[in-house]
Length: 96
Image (cartoon, rainbow, N blue to C red; front, side, top):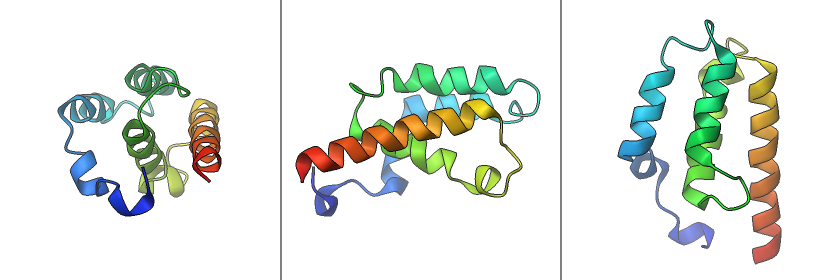
């Protein structure tokens, strides 16, 4: 999928499955960050076989204000974000 025909993020994040996951995480990051990371992993499935849209949704979420500002920074987030980023780069390179 080329950059020009990707769905806008505002459309992607309306996905019902994603909204359920996102809502389940509200208020949970400080209490049980590992559980939150596991919920995101469960939503994603295998990074190498998940859809581009799920990767985009997750990267958008993990680079949002709470994460960028440092309010949410458990090690599992850094690891997950790195895996997603690596997979996105790998796919971009393959399209090249």
